[in-house]
Length: 176
Image (cartoon, rainbow, N blue to C red; front, side, top):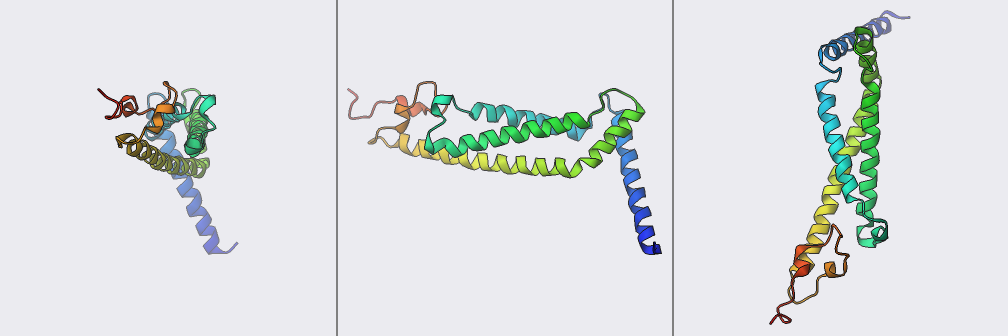
């Protein structure tokens, strides 16, 4: 082995060992063995999962073409949230102790690329959901705010989350 590659390997090993020790110390010093950034990430992931669950329609409305992309996106976001939360739980130490903290730190470093990839996918999913919801809100608002046309939301079931409050109004020509 030539001296340059040996030096590079030693530097990489020392860097990895330093990150491993720093992570283990942070985990050991935390109250419950969870890093602060993982705690906040888990809160965001849990909220995203709850939001995606609320977007899932009842089975009788799942076939609507206008909202099909939104439903598919909600299912994708929910699945990504579940996967990321499962990964966060797998890398947490199961019990207190220095050895468990070192193992957890190793698992964090080992799964860092996977965790970053899942975070990026979830962020992309969140942005797509935002765009879809803006589109749906604009679509419903533009049709419901025209007083001469009947609102498409009138034909939706009463318990539909997409039913706009303006759908209950009577057009001006029918009012007394």
